[in-house]
Length: 141
Picture (cartoon, one colour):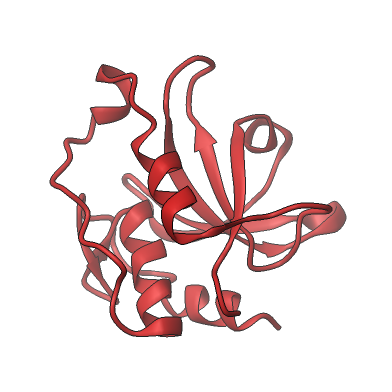
């Protein structure tokens, strides 16, 4: 199993808390990825600025994409376990959701923090796949 997925699975069951990144206490999707980063590398490369829950609907700046390009490595080839996925929740909106691939193939799954659900492992179904805007790797893993 991937060390990335091992670390991400530790977070399953953490309640959803906007802007949080505390294992067992609360996390949003960015908080989950930040927590996995800390589990793999220690200190985070940068602190995120404050953001509202609707920031992705109100702006045009690709904040998450830009941050991913600063700190993660673009993935190429076939989707793999441990890949970080960046999603657009609506067609022309900015990318605003993150998850980590936990299984590939017919039963593909990903781990993410979702409002009213907390950190969960979900099927990477066709509707989710259609929303993928980018795929990245944690450096040094």
